[in-house]
Length: 315
Length: 279
Image 1 (cartoon, each protein chain N blue to C red):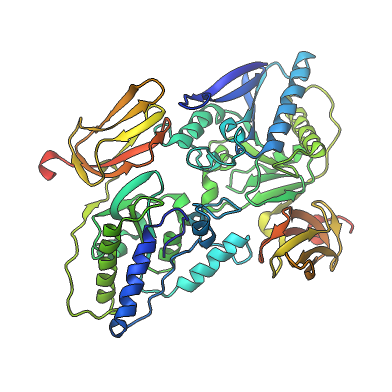
Image 2 (image 1 turned 180 degrees about the vertical axis):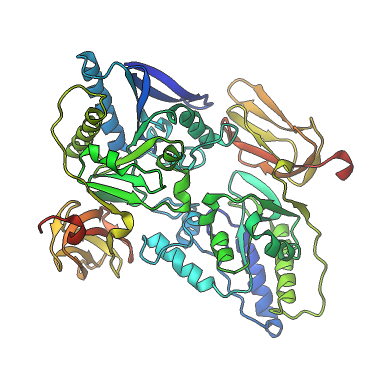
């Protein structure tokens, strides 16, 4: 493994901004893995850092392919993470809305261009991103539906779900979208949490990456088989939302199987403590996403439900 | 419309002037004027540019989705409320970093319809820019796509008011209302003839080559000659001038950096390139 400085910006008031990469093997540019891109993506950083540690061990005992190269970038935005800020410290821009970047543009455009120039040459790209809404997910692979998406390859992760995201205009500047346009097979791996650490979820995603490595000849060691992924689009999910605002008492977890009519959450009057609304499942299925904040506004999408007709699982 | 970005306040004064004039002259009003001073009310109330809690740029979620998130749902309802208008102005104030001359920005897709309207708005500059997929998520693009002519105004600077600009645009708005028969005023004041640009190669961007403190030497709206010093980037620790920033071309300085702390890449200025005999 070689630790390399991939990009730097001199700073006046604090240590220079630096993005480091960890390069395993050499030869065919087989896979690039990007961890946290925003300052609150602690789970993404943790997952990626553990992966670096595991890959180091695998490389040391000769289990990685010697003819292929894997590049891992655990933190694309360490300057924001150090000050617990989600977006760029100076102007609050989001690096994941700047791809493919512009080397003569504004700072985060330059960061995106500087990195993309180095990672767009890989055959496969894996990113550990976070969702823009606060909440917990069932683990899944998410792929932009650009026309270049490679769903069959995504099955190699063995995660329970593959979600095809129909891109909106603002998605066209994300890493996943641009990787695909530049002919990299791109996969976004979502675990349960973002701004805290969930060991089980990190392990699940690490195992899924190792499964992918094995499937594509990058790893010589056996890995336990994964699941047969269910494929659907983000528009197939049923959204449940409260009519009222208040304290959100969540009674079900992401990944749980639920019955039609099952009580999923209560909304309490924020000062008087009385239950003012109950949210029940409109169908049988699997809770794919749950809101995870103590308070909720009316009309917030608090649950995303995968109907049992799509989940193809006995309820 | 204004306040879609909670840190851009120039539109507040425009709303005030428009509402005041209508209140004082109700007999001149021939149509319906809707004023939205705070499209992102939580943002304005908390000195936050985006939507608080989500940290989302509200001007990247239009036209929204009725079944989407809370923010997308709000965007949909706003669009529903605006459809059918004869004209919409979406008033911005650049951001807290840059100061701008009063200008209207138009996506080239809507140039034919919008430029003649913009020329009556009493602004200094009309800038027709290229189509960009990301900008399809803006309020103005969504409205124009739904056949509501929508002009994007940029003027002044974030977190501040520039009363002269507010009065200038207010005059333009009443001029437009007069032309649209929403307002009846027998005395019609002339409007400014704006500078017009639709060639992307005419606009020159100056980005900071180093991190430091930017001290501007020239103001927005000034004519600059190639080689003129626009400002300098300083090191307050050592007393060194890290970089003198010179105009790479002659032209009109229509944007200048207001916020002093810069890093490599920070936008410092924009110049509309003009030949010496055009200045």
